[in-house]
Amino acid sequence: MADDLCFFIKESLIVTPKKSPLVLRMIFLIFAMVCGIYIFSICLKQVSTNTEDGFSSVQVVERPCEPPNVEAWEKPYVHYPKPKTFRRAECGCRPVRLFAILSTQRSGSGWFETLLNNHTNISSNGEIFSIKVRRSNISSIVETLDNIYNLDWFTSASKNECTAAVGLKWMLNQGLMQHHEEIVEYFNTKGVSAIFLFRRNLLRRMVSILANSYDQNAKLLNGTHKSHVHSPVEAEILARYKPTINATLLIPNLKQVDDMATKALEYFKSTRHIVLYYEDIIKNRTKLNDVQDFLRVPRIDLKSRQVKIHKGPLSDQVENWVDIQKALQGTPYESFLHQDY
Image (cartoon, rainbow, N blue to C red; front, side, top):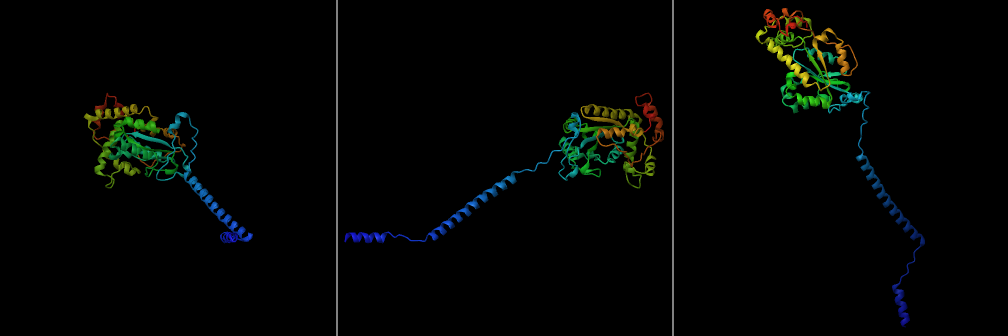
């Protein structure tokens, strides 16, 4: 009886499932497929993440421009500006030279600059520091120069993409002498070349200054003041005015200008520079070839539309000529009475 009872209990507790082998195989197959899909999705996600990280960390590096075939001493003067305001496109690897025309008012610098700007690859941006705020301190000066030499300064002279030489016209009395130490350091550090342009006959320069100052108020050309003209008729009208020169202050004034030019040459002697004179360029246009060679640009025939205002002997251009003759005779400046241009 007890054995029967135990057997009954065992039969009740132990249930032996009887399932088809085909069903088991299907369940295993489905399980394997689900696991495979899950593992594949995880791997795919990891690959995608790594790929994104790889692309995001890649930086596009521009191929550096190959330096031109220049001597070692010249390499500091070869630049490849990267303007913030435009792209240099196909001219991005064209080297650019930096320069500054250092001069004094009414020394032919305006005419000289139009000659340079006649060149396809030269941009001289005018008398930038005639505006006082730009030369108020050395920081303002450096900021302005940086914009000019990075090709981010726009004037009618800007050649932009394919500029091969960029610069400005800078008068000695426009902060240049006051901050000469810092500016010389800037020129030498940045590789800026200086072009000095002076006038030998300082008496003729004085006549031009006085006549130009008079016209600022008189406005002889139909109520308009012009420092430079493009027609012989306008030049003749302006040349009719004959200034009266203070004979007492004449020699001190001439000496002051002469000394300032001498000091400028001394201050900037450590820079790469060239010295030109207005009279020499007038008489010998091959001097312009020297300038183009100095700036490392191809030589071309440079032209200007400007017309000279004061021509002929000085005796026809000064009201008190006799007094001026007496003041200069027997002085180092006597030759100014006879020199042309």
